[in-house]
Image 1 (cartoon, rainbow, N blue to C red):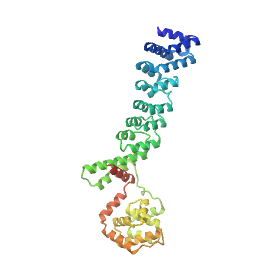
Image 2: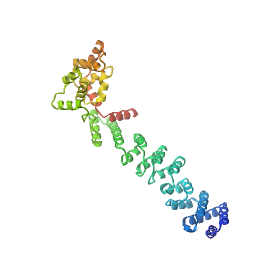
Image 3: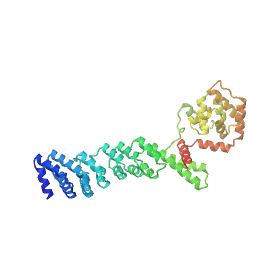
Image 4: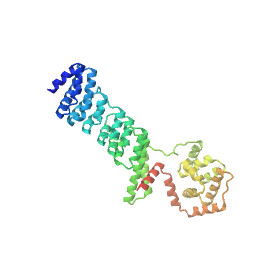
Length: 383
């Protein structure tokens, strides 16, 4: 029987080992399969009776025979070797790149495979091979990035469901952005324990924006009230606090105390500006409008003054007071800057023409989360 002959070959001297290589040249299906079975069994069960050199030779024979025997025999070998860490690297790589049915157990379990082997298989083999790799118990950031690089949505979703896979921050950032258009990424992403809180919050804003788009298209609801509800719910979920909620300067602290006493109003605003108390003026203006300081400064000092018109109209500053504030704000930025008569008349006419309700609605929108507004804009533009 073939098994007896093969056993004798392996137990002989080096000259007999050459006969074993000669047997490998037998092209018949029966001969190849008989040799393969005997090599497989001896390789797996030889133990201490087989020297390292003989084991290496058997491994090379098996590697050469792999594609010449039927798939169920290759699968049998792969299943047994997938759980062993003492298998020669070349043989494992050969099996990992075999047909999917053979490669599957190796790709799923073998710890002999290195990152470079997995990445090469990802690049050059089928989606089924990629899926098997995506389900390995442990994956490095490099292998995860290679899987994402395939662009295969099923593979990426499988990777995201694998909490043993490490995913780098920049890849996670990319996947959060991609989840806007790929629904299958959303649920796995939000359930990943390594999803950074800021990315989770970003996801919540665009999901909220998508919900807003759907409701606005299908139901007759006030968008302002809808925005209020969505923004409040999202902010509460992630504990988001307005940037202006905590005093950052002594001016903020003073304005907070005066506001509690009811002393922060339009007259206080103008008085602070007249006296050159710019920090106090800005803090009071933020308090009256609810705007963040960065946005307020952009409105205050933009060249045309139209945005400032809307802001002042929203808080009922009054036309003449607006004109004075506009002049003072320009001089606060540049003492040599002059406001022309034509500019004053244009802005005052715009102030009178602007409806307070429209100005208040625009101001309210400006107070919303910039992340939410950006998400709403992106969703609207893609619709």
